[in-house]
Image (cartoon, rainbow, N blue to C red; front, side, top):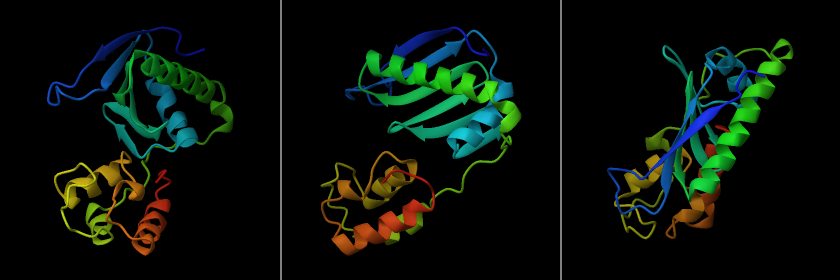
Length: 174
């Protein structure tokens, strides 16, 4: 087992103090950088960095970044959700490491969706019904995986299907 212990740090966003959710850092007692290329292959990380080593995933509706000695998770409901996701990630790290002989390590991230390509598929009304200030901000949220076509009340069925088809090539849950 590569990762055995970690310490949780839960905090609210300083730049969005009114936000209801929390963020989390799990400070790892062990360095897991050697497992990151294997974890990247298994979970399909959309961003992989070599120096310093880190891989970012979209999983369980969250952005999760695993660094050598830290796991960062954004936009969590509460401490229990943070613990659940970090525990899951710990298991995934250990499983990828244990099975590394059968896994081809990947040092590349997945292709990323283009914000302008997403914006082209939106109504561009800046109506704010999606609770974002502009369609450009909304397109960015879709690219990050935190919003989907269903979050735009102004999007007709044809455009929603077009957007979902475009996003499907990036293995994002939209």
